[in-house]
Image (cartoon, rainbow, N blue to C red; front, side, top):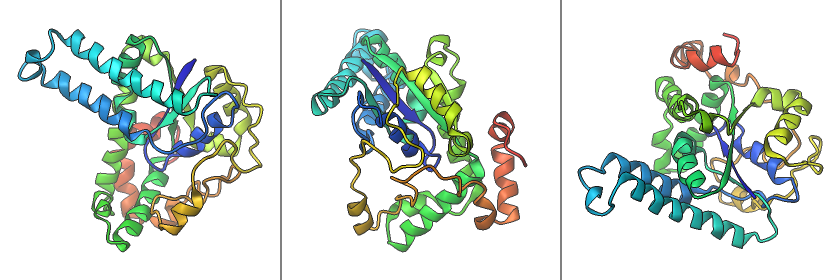
Length: 276
């Protein structure tokens, strides 16, 4: 039994990638964000940072803190297994958890779990353009969350970098060996080799995945999301693979905004061969 975690910045295709793994009969269905688990991992990271000042009074050592939190994290995984008892493998996603993947790996691997990470990369300019639209919808609805997504390319670019850098720059070799990188543009334009890569890395057969059909194993309530005018809802969720949003930043961002993004995100643009 394995735990598969989907990573990537918001609007990079994490839900799409999650849907592919969840199309397998041996996994749990596609479900919403594992935000509770993020709070467990954040508690561990903060506990490490404050160990000498605060937590040495509660835990005998840093290892004691790790083992305590690992049991908590594993109990959450067990709760998911109880919720979906037919699932042999667990597939979970919460984009803000991505920077904490190294800590999550430390916790769950120390608790005996087989943990694997599938991180999706997307052109930061398209990500920023999509975030701009989400921010506009949030602000039009009067939601305070809209203030966290301003039309400020420096902030959005750094938002992108803060998500990926901690997850991809962590030097532990064992952790690195449990990461599979997926490029969004490859997935939606030439899916066959990408799906085969996912099969090899996960051990899942993915026999029911069909790039031309609606998502399978999907328990997300799209009707409810539409009725509530959920600002994060994507028009592509639940549908067949589509590459129509590649390069959409050219329609949404100004040349000046694009230049700022290309400066802030120069590293991933070069590393993942995005043309400038």
